[in-house]
Image 1: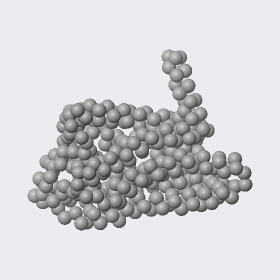
Image 2: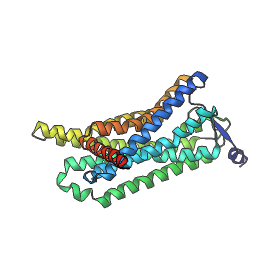
Image 3: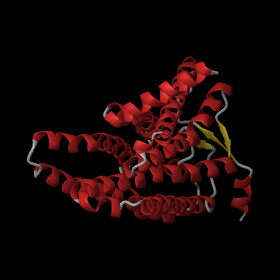
Image 4: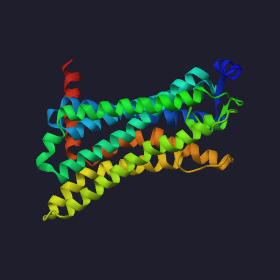
Length: 316
């Protein structure tokens, strides 16, 4: 109990980014640029889909949900990192750290579940096209996204509560935000329960959606290869290419960060931080480009939206 009272007034120091003064300005500008582009790009996708009735389909509904989750996911970590770099302060209060952890896990897991849901959508569209409208009705799509939010909130709540039980001997977190692994490393409590829950619950949250995506695409590829015309095969593959690129980028870095063991050496900490930057900042940054550049309908919708905005501003 004394440990918990001491922890309630604790301040952590986020020590994941470079401490060299000459690199601080470069890091600030780089993170600021990535954050602005991420928010602007994903917001454009949401607005383009919302204003174009031709894109009011399950696939684009899930894409808009993914873009919203990406904005929230990045906003959980990057603004605090920018403030710390600008003020040359690495501190974060214990309460703020737990709040950041909860929302980071919620929005990060939401990305995972939405990518699995999008794979299921493509599976139904390509393997069962005649039943697509019935299976992926508006009500079912809304239920799927709602279920994703509820599940991610419960998972995040479980991990955050288990971290709340711990007391901490060190203020220094070897990362630029509050995450499960770094927090457990600086705890002086027994973290065996946390580690087991992270292994089984965290592993399930990552690997079960990943396996569902793999199974979906095995069926999708099998169905596409049975299409007689080369043009039909290309069109079917083109609707899945963007999603597969995002899945490979996101799951590759997440699996490296959470399911591959790392030591406490400086090289390993740097590798963990690089992996964290990849899935927290770089992947949400690249998603709008991947989906818009490889998708003709999305490019046309963005062009129409931007033309409309320009015309509207001129009219004003």
